[in-house]
Image (cartoon, rainbow, N blue to C red; front, side):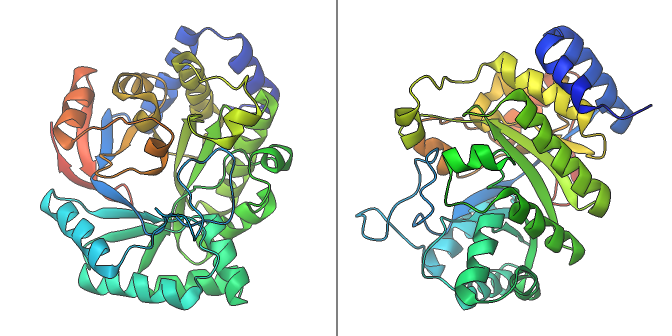
Length: 349
């Protein structure tokens, strides 16, 4: 079967019925996951700092150094969060922060080493491309050196955050200080070449066109062809509350469940070299999150013991392991707990 072209993807987004897209995406998903296993990971999102100089207009989380509620977590605070995660059977921390203007590579090396040595069973899935990019700049070293040094201290994989839409016309509007498309892709390629796996993400619903969304998919599909280093694709919609972007562009509206499921289904068809696609229940809510499993997603992502960035924009959805298991069973699929590398740790069927 030939690959979906950009023109075909555009036609599906704009003209196919939602029901037809669900049928097509479910068929494709079943080819990749014939045993109908839907996975999730028990982890905690630890934002080690909220101090950031990048000023993304779509972000309500970041603070400036002098703000009263700006912080950098202490080792003791981080340890407490990991201890609480271990108590509920967690296996991973999603470790990200704002892009602090003064912290150099040595700070990150010490931090990763501390966590890895004290908690050897916890996988450190951390530092987005924008963090890697800035650490390299302020430390006057290359991407490869940053990644290699952090890997040696215990970094296991990196998240796909900061991709938003991989189109510089869009990025220049919503995050003009953030690294460009070429550099985001370069960070991930360098990581893959060092044996550091990553995820690919997309945030839609700001100023992008359908064509720019498809171009984003094309770029990550091409890199996946080259390296095979992406473990999963994760997509979510822009959350506008308390953000500069919503004030600057008042006609930006919340994205519907229909729009989310439509794009998710076409992503499953287009990204034929991605085995895993996550449902974004954190932004969509548990019911659309569940429905996403009928539109191509095979993974519910994280139980998300802690989430600070999306909640700062006024969206608070939560689920625990038992709720995830029930939600998966309710649609006739087989729930399983996984680790960061998508290895099954425990089956619930």
